[in-house]
Length: 168
Picture 1 (cartoon, rainbow, N blue to C red):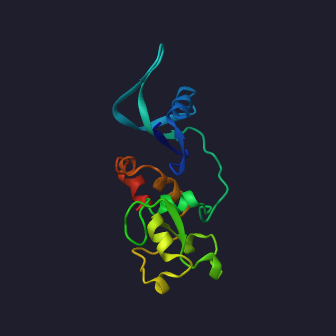
Picture 2 (tube, helix red, strand yellow):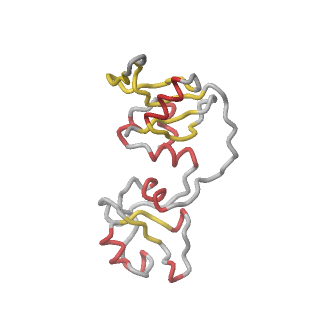
Picture 3 (spheres, rainbow, N blue to C red):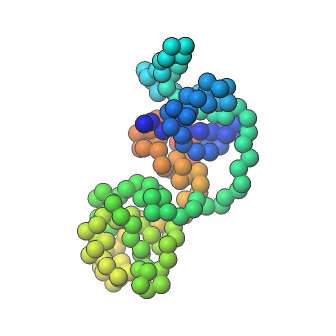
């Protein structure tokens, strides 16, 4: 299923929704298509429209202010683009920079994506103790960054420049 980016009426990223939900929002006149997938169409008995890639809500939705995205294992993998922080291979798990056994917690600055081999090799040691330097430092993504990073790389590269630049 293709994910569709939903923008607020003020062009701020709000969330991603399934293709079906995006089509329903457009057909109910609750959203307009800002960008479409080239060459792809949704066809039904009384409907023929382009497949939406980015939609914008017609009415502004007030969202409570969040300074940072909530931490999650999936969020860490998405933030690090499923790349191991130690070797650069495909990451399948999350590693604590300061192990929980040494008082490290579950938060953005203490967790990185890791492949299972490096996670096992590092064990209950810090990267310095294990002799495994990090290829990149963990950071706290904004909610907008987290949402845009959740889109596949190919979909992110096809976004308008003014929007794709927010997740750089």
